[in-house]
Length: 120
Image (cartoon, rainbow, N blue to C red; front, top):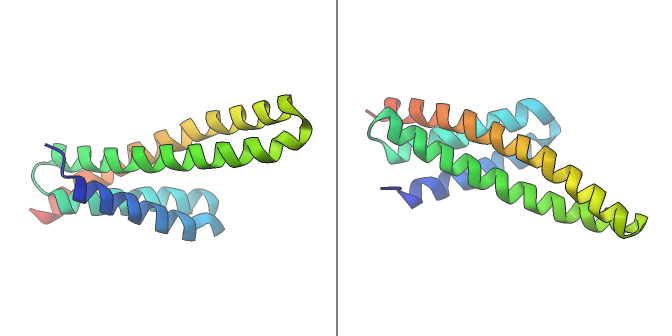
């Protein structure tokens, strides 16, 4: 059973650390995934699989939310180039966002397993 409180805390930690990590683009985002996944896994506790699951869910949700937000923003800004400009800008951002979601999910799952292990 998923502990949504642990996932929610991991999600918030991911967003806050990710926002601060924007000054260091790659390292900041990877660090956000690791810290948020660790928080989710630690709060969930239990087995390594349970911690990994909670880290994975927190990382995936934050990646999806970030992707949708940036794609909408990019689509609106790209709309200045006409309807095709908005479509191309939003679509390109969605592809990059899918990669970011995967990055957040994988490192958050690994950190979630470590968090669950650290709690036990």
